[in-house]
Image 1 (cartoon, rainbow, N blue to C red):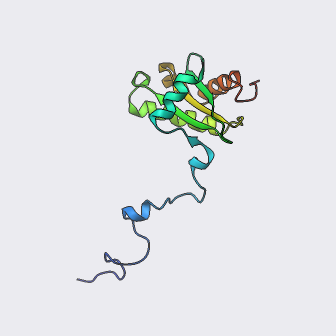
Image 2: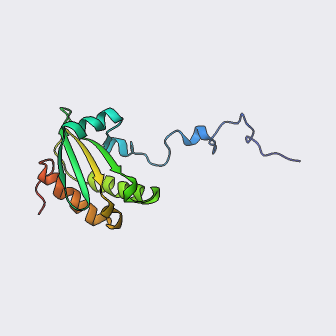
Image 3: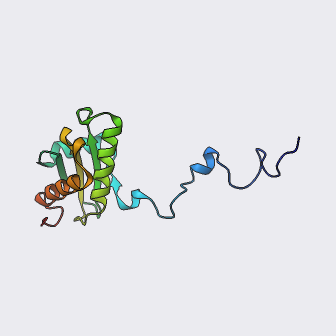
Length: 144
């Protein structure tokens, strides 16, 4: 039985093992983290919920709190009332992308909470809603 050269366990070169795929891969850019800093940890979310100002409509609730940093940090919440995991993740992906493309004033912690009606809304409707609420909060330029 013949074996292929350089395919054994100690062979150098690209492989499909976990080590190779954990290297980042795919895109030459720094990824979404450089474009959209995430709010992490229960303490950070609790601070925005406790001290932040809330703005809401039928689809979303946006809570904002000045953070004193030269950039914004974002958190996205979709509770079980929004739908099953696939639906909740889809809503959060749409919101994340829509907000990533907006020009926002720096220095805010922003938590975007999806209401159950957000599950039936398309990307453009969610983006308009987020822009309207962020404009009311003074984080984005006034929506036209």
